[in-house]
Image 1 (cartoon, rainbow, N blue to C red):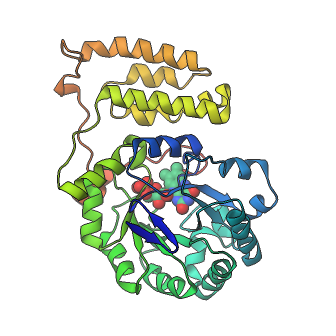
Image 2: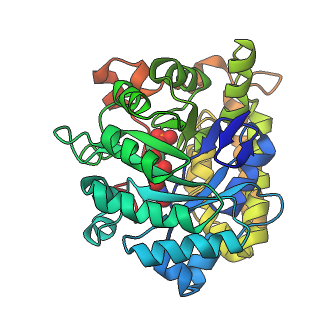
Image 3: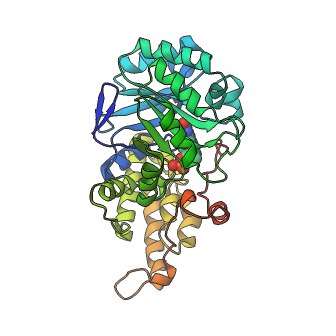
Length: 368
Ligand SMILES: Cc1cc2nc3c(=O)[nH]c(=O)nc-3n(C[C@H](O)[C@H](O)[C@H](O)COP(=O)(O)O)c2cc1C
């Protein structure tokens, strides 16, 4: 269905790395809901991995239900990136992705992330060293360029294709843009046109199956990668597969299904991170699910204080009772309380796109 170098994938839809979120529990939830095949970790510092730093090893924690898995590396020292790729192959990781899109100062200052987009020859040499060291595919993830005056992604993509990358993921914004403005589909199309044969995977603001389809149609990309859209809607991958295969748009998942998947997510967080830590981490995850619940104040206020699974279920029970006042006799949310449909930035006029942009989660990576 989708060839990534030597890897045969069952889907041309991908989960984008989201530092702080794309951990093992989230990936397992996404895989259980379906429609995706290759998922990726958060970005991992190559040197920390080689030093077997505890946090780096936790970031690449995986299990047999989390296959195939890509690990995203960042770093700018060729020897470290080379050795880290070899180490990941030895650990049975299916694919290595290189971060060239991160705009965070800490990462760029040392020549990693978006800074790699400014020095093509150096970046291509680093990539070539990695490609030659492993049999697994090496991919790169980039933005369109540093700023509007430096749209370097097409040239860099061509150089990286020559260096042997198996695919390129492109977030259709510049580093300067951060997360503002709309995703530039024409920019992604230029990257598609620049390479000879490797797949280009488009990314940015895909929150609905229609938006994924539009990204395919308008850019000619071979795959689409979804980040924040998968927070709101872990069903987006299977809904998109369905839309692409049949032309039919499935209804949004029912409220009960959203609750079921949210609870499953918490169980997996507890399994992987222990009860207290897993629940604390879930404080920032639950509000993403609840964005599509309708009236939700009561839930959001309380869920940010949970420390145990019992506390979470108590908050949920109380919320379900409170929510009844917004429902009809059968327990379905009255249409006037339903959240408005989601529309991707590039499917709106620019003014409203800016007003209704997807929130960027709070945390140390808020300038991603
Ligand atoms: C909280 C957060 C963390 C991110 N972490 C990473 C990361 O570790 N590596 C990376 O290449 N991109 C990272 N990104 C960028 C996303 O992978 C993606 O390119 C971007 O969010 C646009 O796609 P989306 O609109 O589907 O989320 C991050 C974005 C956010 C919001």
